[in-house]
Amino acid sequence: MKADKRDEPEIDESLLTEGQKEELSKKPSAKGFLIFAGVVVALIAICFIVIYSLGGPN
Image (cartoon, rainbow, N blue to C red; front, side, top):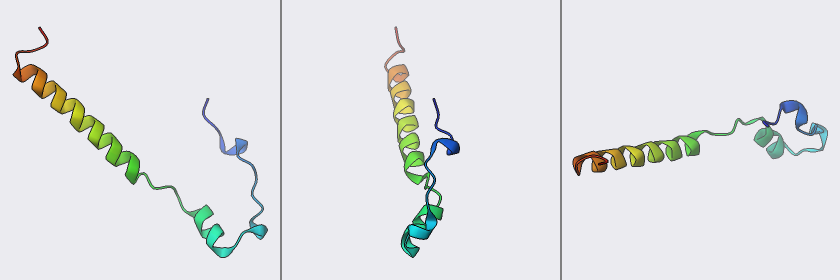
């Protein structure tokens, strides 16, 4: 089950430092996920190319 924003605890921003407030407001980067997904897709494509260049799955 996916967690909602409602399931996250409320954060009292008056207790945070300026650096923590900036970190809280930043959106998480999807760069790592995109690199991972690209590598997985490339490996799957290489597997198909090798399998079919060797005569197929027979």
